[in-house]
Image (cartoon, rainbow, N blue to C red; front, side):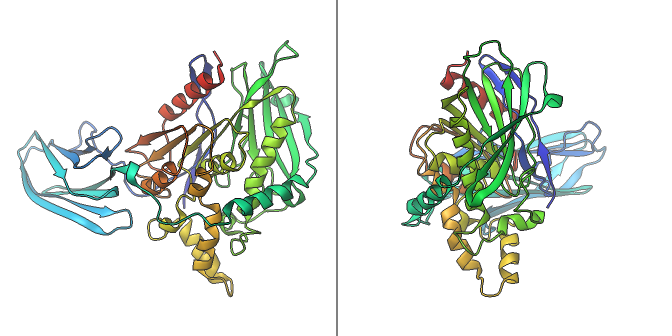
Length: 444
């Protein structure tokens, strides 16, 4: 599993904000974004879903454009197959094509009668001197998607117990200024605090330099992607403190929980009361406690934001701690967990591997435990405005799973879809997030 960190440059201006939060972005090996329009290529193709968001209320529509730069005709076929997200073939079509030399053609397709859900589209071309497959996805009536798996009856009590245990741990907050990392307009601090199970966690806080001793700052709480070492984030905004948190087992907080990379997702997963994510989520709640302990921070203006595992954590902490004012989650993992089985390789394969290595631990038992960690179940508890971003080609968060989360939200919500992206969002999302935050918090 290849992965990389994506950092978006910060530019803070009134009505325009690009927040730099680190995401774990998985590098899909499939050529899902393959579309060849380079000058000089002998054959090039473009597959387009004919809706900005790639979703339809009834009949799906897409087009396939082919450009033949050869000095000879190209004969063969174009074909497609449409499958469910779990690979069941729903519809196929094949047709002959004869492309004249130095010509282009466009083919339009309509697919009626599909049920609500998301579908994978594989478009193939096989002509005299060229073979290729382009992959896309589209949705039908996504607002009708609901998970068939109910929240555990004792979900709320389970998490209240965790919060009660956290409350008994003295946080022992510690702030250490890092002069060597200071910029001309921001001070940088390392933050330390004790969390659930008396585990020490760390992070960073950057604070605008101001002569106003009574200044109170709004807060961006940046939460980590899977096995990402978050660092201080600085910017030009004079109204915003940025906190980046390394939860247990992440970055600078590996003193106690220090697993191999692939093993982290399965650490103690057979016991819902000891699973690593129980502590990780409580680390996020403890970070909110830290914010409330700081007199220079606006306790009513906290934005929790993150991508991948950070998106999962943003939704989880916002569902459990209503002190969060805004929630932003990009490509949140652990979404509608039961329906991940058969649809994705990660984290399901790593979880199966763990179960197979432990005597007496069954995969079904573990998946049932994950009902207590399912993003959709946290989403149903969220009261603050929530923003979610999804890529329709995401190999780890199928869009139907993401919509099961989105449709579990009961309050003010907004979805931004990227029909040609995988486990990532574009700068468009971060720009929207920034404007949304500034408008909501009145930062002009």
